[in-house]
Image 1: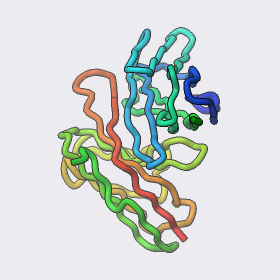
Image 2: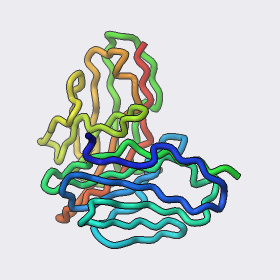
Image 3: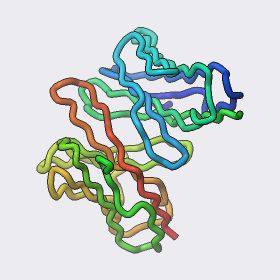
Image 4: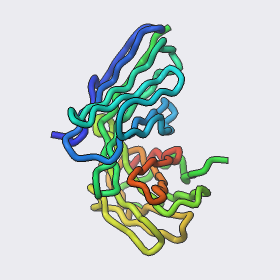
Length: 109
Length: 115
């Protein structure tokens, strides 16, 4: 079993829908990261959080440390949100990231 | 200009050839990483370096070697390429600056095909 599991692996939705991507992890962490990878391949960091909730525009990330679970929400989804979303955890003491397998999101107009 | 650059961006080579992938960064970060990405498997760590004199194996280092020529440069070599090394390769940098957070900044990726 992977230390970081994402669900769903693939998600297709219509423009305007509310999107939720989930990430569960089984190790102790110091922080959790959400990354976005566009079809061109480049990877950018969206959020880094260790507790609570963060919001950037239409994107919201939450984390529940006790339940070892994080969610990434997208409100009013748009076709330009189509990408692979990757969850990664910063494991305590290891100073390395462990990555989930990614969630491929497709938003249709 | 991009902060983390990788060359080449695409490479097709044959089994048995030696290949070098190069990564340069202008962020001034001490930490650099090489990952490979395969469909359905996510990013996996090949090697990482926390400074010029520090090189560490990641989870999938067999068949690869690295060189940290300077703070800004970290190269990945495939001494004798094989087809199952066909993948997308990413370089990344980070600078936790005393915190335990490890936000990483990725290069654009190198798509390597070994025939």
